[in-house]
Image (cartoon, rainbow, N blue to C red; front, side, top):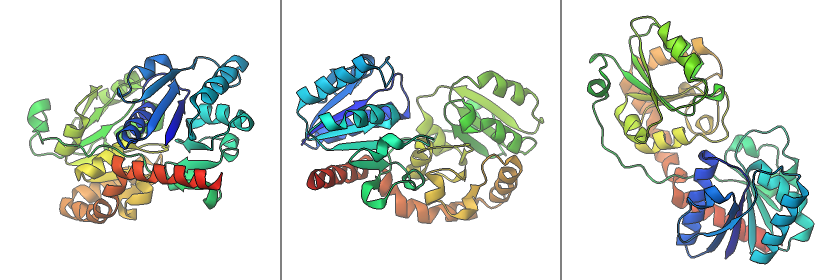
Length: 337
C-alpha cells in the first residue's frame, strides 16, 4: 500500500512523535510511506520513510499552501491519504473533491470545531471520548502505541536526596495549565511524601513559586526536561496524572506498560482503562488529596487495582497494536471507496 501521511504542525510534541512512529512501523511492515510536512520535522523521520516538504508556516486556508498540497498529493499517487490532527484534516477535507484516494483523519485532542473530520472518508480517534461525536461506521478508536519501555529501577531517594521513609510520586509532562500540576501541588501540600515533576514549559516559574510555599513535610522537585522518564516512572512508588484535559496521554500508556501504580483525573485514556477507584474529578485538589492518602495507606491494594487494566489493555497500547488497527482502517476505507 502507498500511504501519504499529512502533518501540518511545526515543532515537536506527542503528535509529531506519533506520526514518526506510525510512519516507521508502516514502512517496516512493507508499505510505501510518504510524509508531507515541515522540512525540519521531515529530517527526523526514519530513513525508509519518504519525505515531501510543504510550507507549514502558512495558514490552513492559505490558497498557496492548499495548491501546493493538492499538487504534491496528486503527484504522490497514493492509495490512502491520512491527515494527522486538525490543521491537516481541514486542508485535506477542503481538497477532497480533487483527490482520488480515500481520506482518513486522526483526531488527537478535544477540539470545538471538528467539522473537517466529518468530510473525510473515515476518522480515527485516539480515545473513546474523542470518538463520541462521530457515527460508529465512520469512526474507529485506535490508541496511540508506544514501544514497550525497557529500563532498570534506580534509587530515586538517593539520586535526589529525598527522605528515605516517604513515598516518591512521579508526574510528567509539558509544564502547561492543561496538565494540572498546580492542582497536584495543592493536593499534596502537607502530606509526608516526595513529588518529582519531569518536564519543562511556560508554567515553570509559577510552579516554582508555589513549591516555595509548600509545607516543610512535603518535598517537591521540578526536574526539567528528562530523557529518562521511563526510568523515573519505573522507580517511583506511583505515577500521578493531574490533567485538566487530554486527548491521549502518553504518560499514562507508558506508566501502564511499565507496571506502575497510577492515579489519574477523569481524562482519556486513563478514564477508559482504570477502575473508578483510581480516577478522581478534574480540577478537584481535595478529591485528589483524599484518594491519594487512601491509596498510600494501602499500597498493596493499589497494586491490586492495577492488575486488571495492565492485563487487559497493555497489549492495546503497543506500536504493534496501533499498526494493525490503523492498517485495518486503511483496508476498510479502500473497500468502501
